[in-house]
Image 1: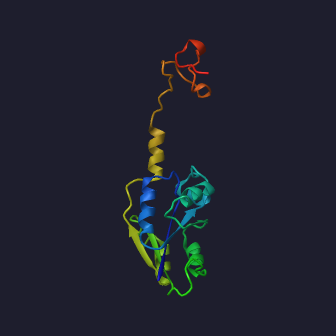
Image 2: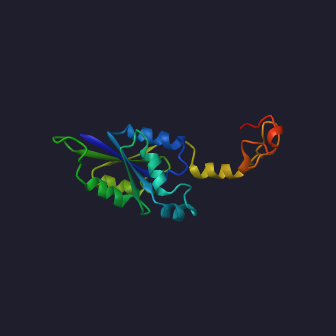
Image 3: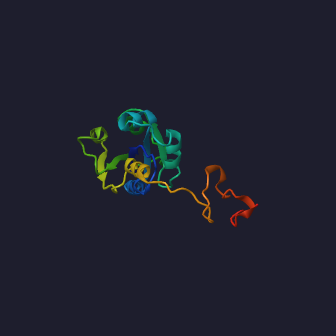
Length: 180
């Protein structure tokens, strides 16, 4: 029997916590399929658009070796996507396999009560599991970045930089940092 693992998320500001979770989810089965929330969902849930649009977030997740397939979804929960995935022919495994088992993996902040896909996957004969999540979230990272005061850029000689003049301090030939 082959095992497909499904998980989903926003994956905005991709960080080590995302990677750790996806690597551990992949260890549960033979293939990891990741659903990525559409931009509209992010606005509805978090009150602001994602930093990276859906296509870019999907490209980042798809670039990971542990991920076999990435699918977008626009609904507030992944149940419709999961129904489509579980119901489609399993073209990924050789004929003669005794079937495919499905596991839905979510972070430890989820339970049967707040993850509608838990009841769905179990009704379809699959398993719902939670994996411990690292205590890091993109929203918290963004909030930290906003609070960090930016130091003004300075040339090695101490002359203030501007964005248009990052590699030359502005006083041209007299500066020891000037290069052609």
